[in-house]
Length: 292
Image (cartoon, rainbow, N blue to C red; front, side, top):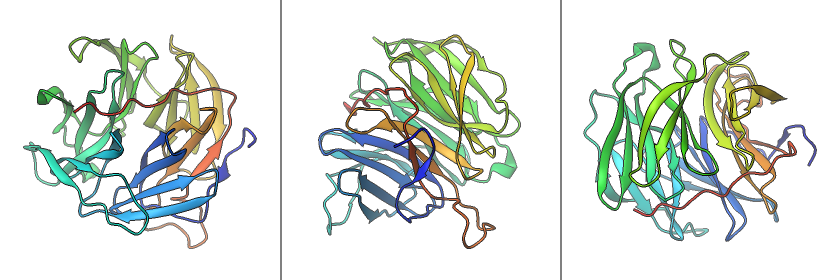
C-alpha cells in the first residue's frame, strides 16, 4: 500500500469514527455515529461486516474479547462481534448530561486501560460548552474536565505521560497537551499544543512510536503529523474534505486507517463517508483494552 490514501471497500458512513485495530483477529473496527452501526474490516480477507446499534456510539474501545461503547446516555459493554449475531449492549454507567441533545464523541483508553471520552451537544450550531471529559475505570465514572464544545483528538504519548485533547468546534479549533499522571489518571498543566492547523479543524488523532501526533484536518481533506514539540513535519491528502479519525493498525502497525463524514448534501457519487488506508512510513502503537 503506497503513501497515498486508497479507499477500503464501497461502504459510506454518515460519520465514521474511532477505528480500533485488534491484533488478535487482525481487524479494524469502527463506529458510524448517525448510522448507529459498528463496522469491521479484515485486511487479510477483504471482508467487511456491519452490526446495528440501538443508539449512536461516539467512540469504542476493546474490552476483553468484546467492546466498550460510549453511546448517547452512557457507557455500554458488548460481547465479541460474531457474523450473523446482533450486538446487544449492556449498560455499565449512565451519564447525567448537562444539557439536552448530548452524546459521547471522541475517546480512547490510556496506557493503563482507563477509558477517557468526551461528551458534546449534538447541535454544533448552538456552540454550547456543556461537554465534559469523563474517565471510566474500576472505580467508576469521574469528570476530569468541563467547558468543552466538541471534545476530540484524544491521544496519549508512547510513555503515557502526555495527553492530547482538541476541541474541534470552529470557535476553538485547537489542540491542547496535558501532563498526565499515569498513577491517578489525572491530566494537569494544560497548555496549547496546536493553536491552529494549516487548514481545517482538528478532529480525531493517533500517536506513532516516535511520539508523533497525527491529527485529521476536518474540512481540509488532510492528515497532519506533528512532532512531540509541536512542529508540523508531514501532511497527507485524502480525497474527501471531512476526514474524521485516523488510527494505526495492520500486521506491522504501519497502516493508517482514516474515516470520513458524509453530509446529506454530498453528491451521489462523492466519496464523502468512505474509509481509506495509507502507509506513511510510520508505526503506531496498539490500543490498550479497557480495564473497567
